[in-house]
Image 1 (spheres, rainbow, N blue to C red):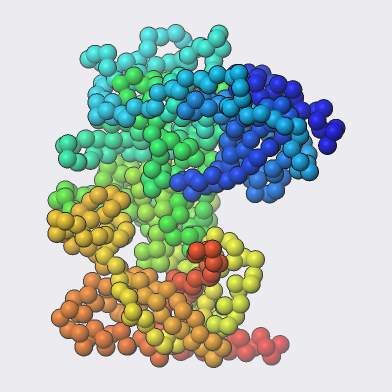
Image 2 (image 1 turned 30 degrees about the vertical axis):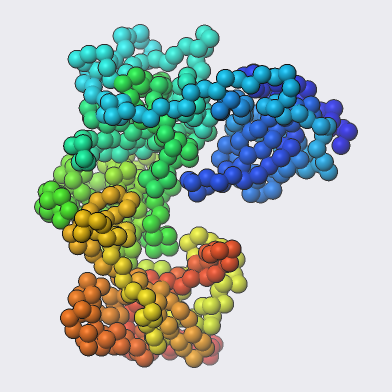
Length: 618
């Protein structure tokens, strides 16, 4: 341990908290603990020591992997490669963006370091003001734009919204601090700082949309910007939203300063920062020359054939060839009475599987009007749904681009023009999780299916998917067999004081809910028994009626209701099941969800049995 005592950088803590980032000190992790984070991802707080003094620090999320792999532990010696000092409520806190582990954990702490935030003789800094709550005017700042040019090498007058001095500023160039450009890492900014400027690449851009609340109508637009440290969501309202919608370009780099920061709402925010930005009248949004220092947008494309293995509700990137486009359908919203535009398209790729995608509103009208030429469509941030097995849902935050300039898009176009257009594609819903009936020749017994929990793959967040042939013996009736769902999102609704049904997430109210099944069903074969969860589509396959219809029958024709619940029992089904491990109240358990259910086709199953017998005779 003595050898490391001499290698710690003396007075490193004092230098770091004073803002000196010109060196890469060697320090010891004196304490380390996980802190709660409403975003759902792990955050780690630690105490950094140079042997004489110590200071609180937070690890940037990109360093979490070092902790998970036990490379970085309490009492380890590390060299800080990149960091920044913040003052939060009068306390100095370091944000560690990059480090290198120099040694495994030592037996004990080196020296008797004194906390820099509590030592005698070091005055506490004056607390910075708490962040002001953005006013309605700040959130709904009006601005009219003139066209801003993109060449930052040419000196120009700043672009400002026309018609006055108020409104967010979009200008060219970057603030010079101390004679050089200085940008804060996105993960280091917080509401307690007064002067910061970030630089990042736009990695997602939502569409301009209208909303209505108690104060009237408005419009909102948001985008996400990222650098090497992380990402943050940026929102703007009213005329500013319209201007930014036309000015912000997906994939371009920008700098942002003088925006309000507030706690991110994890329900609608997938960025890594704990905060989200709201542009106000004083905000500055500046195009910045792309010098290559910020990584390009990364797409994690999932093939259409692989969608069945993805977790329902997960957000995906998909690249496909448009092979079908429907006409626009006009619908009326049951909640607001507004006219809704809907268009369905079909995509395929090299997996030779197809999937439908529904576009709404302006996207339905403007994104694509014909499949002539079979364009390539990039879908970023779409949601994997489970309607009728597997579906893709477009969200307000989803981004779409026709014929993107990507190598993957060029390759897919080449494949389709050469061979893909002559291939007979199959819907991904005919082979969910590997298929059912004639599309799947492997059957497990219930005992074999339950033994899968011993396998390492059970830790996979997607779970393990398998097929069983079993008889349904009981549907539990000790709780509701369905729940009142939002007609638009399928989220649960609750009764409101107005006599309507309310979505507590979106605050929308509906006259009537859309009931969706959630059944707990027992299945048996000659090897054992298993409790299975049947959600809406799978439940309809065995009941034969929707939950809405069953709700009416329960109230007015109870005998028919009971008959339909008894009808599937003691009959054989082929069930595609997902086994997934989760933790409830510190107890690890395995849940089994039916992805697809179909009555046994005796001719098809006889062929499966003959094939199984043939394997045993070989």
